[in-house]
Length: 327
Length: 233
Ligand SMILES: Nc1ncnc2c1ncn2[C@@H]1O[C@H](COP(=O)(O)OP(=O)(O)OP(=O)(O)O)[C@@H](O)[C@H]1O
Ligand SMILES: [Mg+2]
Image 1: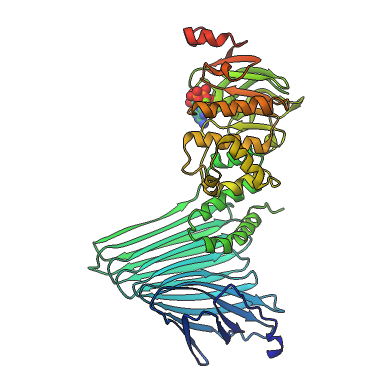
Image 2 (image 1 turned 90 degrees about the vertical axis):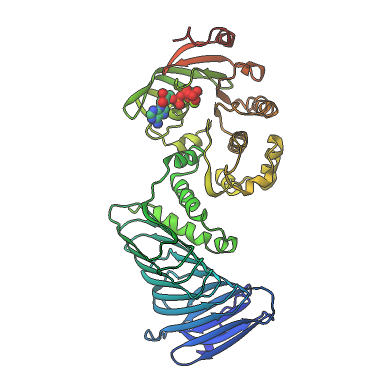
C-alpha cells in the first residue's frame, strides 16, 4: 500500500484533503491556519472535528478523497462522522479514484453534525465504476445545509439521506439530479425530520430517464406537533424519454403541526417544444437543442456558481449520452 | 432563391394558409402585411418547418430544392433565418454560451463589436437567455443572432414593433448596408406603414384570412393607410 501511495493525488484547491485508501483513513492535510482539525479513529469509525479558531466566519473547501486499489476488502464499510463547528462555511466534495480496478462496490455511512451559524454545501458524487450504497445523516443546529445529490453515473446506486434538525432556525435544501439510461437502477430515500420551529426545507428532484432505467424515489417529511413557522417544499419532476422506464416516486407527508407551510408534488416533465423549435431554427442540431434544453432546466436551480462549475461538464456529457438514440 | 407554390397549411386540422404563392429572388425585399390573425407568422413558421404546421399541399422550394420535409435545423443550415415576433426566454442558459452554440468560432471581440453596433450592453449577455430583457431588447438579441449566423434569406416577423426610433434606424441600416450588399433576400412582416422610409421593397404582399389577396409595388401601402384592408379581402 505504501508503494502505491505516491500515486495519490492531492487537490491543491482544497484547504483540507482527507485521504482514504481502501476506506482506511490515511492522512489529513489542512492548509488553513484558521481551522483546527481533531481526529479520532478506531477500527469501525472515524471522527473528524473541524473547529474555527477565530471568532469570525471562515470559508473552507474540504475534499473527501477516496482511493481504491486492487485489493479492496468489500466488507470494510466507510463510517465517517464529521462535526463542523460554529461559523464555518464549508464546501464538501467527494472524489473517488480507482487504481487498477474496473469496478467497485462501496458502502459509505457519513454522519455530519453542523453547528450554529455554519453553512454546508455538500456535493455528493460518484464515479462511473462504482456501485454504491450510501447513507447520509445530517444533524443541524441553527445552520444551513445545501445538498447536491448527483446521480449521473453509469452504475446502480442506493442512497439514503436523512436530515434532522436539532434546533430552531435551520435551513436545508436538497437538490437532486438524476440522469439514467440503459439498465441503470437508482433507489433514493430522503427523510426530513423536524421537531423545532422556524425551519425551512426545500427539496427538488429532477430526473431524466431513458431506455430501461429504473428509479425508486421516496421522500418523507416529518414535522412534529405544535411546532411553528416551518416551511417545507418537495417537488419531483421527471422527464421520461422511453416507454420502458420504470418509475416509482412516492412522497410521504407526516405533518402534525397546523402552523406549517407545505407543498409537494410529482410532475411528469413536459418538453417545451417551442423552445426546442427556437433552438433548431437557429441551426442547433436536435441533439444539442435537447441537451441545451435539459441543461437549462437543471442549471436554473443551481444557484451556486462553484457547484455548477464542478458538475456542468459531467451533466452535459451524461445528458448527451442519454439522448443519443440506441441502434 | 425562395419559391412557394400553391401552399396549403393546416394546424390541428384547421386550414390556416390557402394557396400561397411567392417568388423571392436574390437581393429582393418583400413586405408582407395584413390584419391580425391573417396568417403572416404562420407563413414564417411554415417556411422554417415548425412542427405541427403541416403542409397539406404545395411546395416550399429553396434554390430549386423542395424543402418541405426538412427539419428546422436543416433549414437554418441552408441559410434561412427567422426573427421571431415574440422571442422566447430560456432560464438556465447563459446568453454568451448560447451564442457560441450558434457559431463556435465567434470571438468575444466580434460579439462585442455587434453589441456596440446594436447598442446592446454586453454585460447583459451574462444573464440567462432573454431573461428579464425588455421587448425591444429581445428584438435586438434576434438581430445579434442574425449577425452571427449570416443567413441568405432573412424573415423578420414584426421586428419593428415595440422598438424605439433609434433602434429601428440601426436595424434597417444593418439590413441595407450589410445584408443587402451580401445579396441576401429579406421578407419583412410588418404593421408599420412607414416601412418604406427605412427600406425599399421590391414587392408588397397583402395576406388576408390565409390568402394572398394582393401582390404589387409599395404604392399599395398608401392605399392601406387611407382605406384599410377592406379592399383586399
Ligand atoms: N398553434 C395554433 N393553433 C391553432 N390556431 C393557430 C395556431 N397558430 C396560429 N393559429 C391561428 O392561425 C391564424 C393566423 O395566425 P398568425 O399568428 O399567423 O397571424 P398573424 O398574421 O401573424 O397575426 P398578427 O399580426 O397578430 O401577428 C390565427 O387565426 C391563429 O389563431
Ligand atoms: Mg404574427
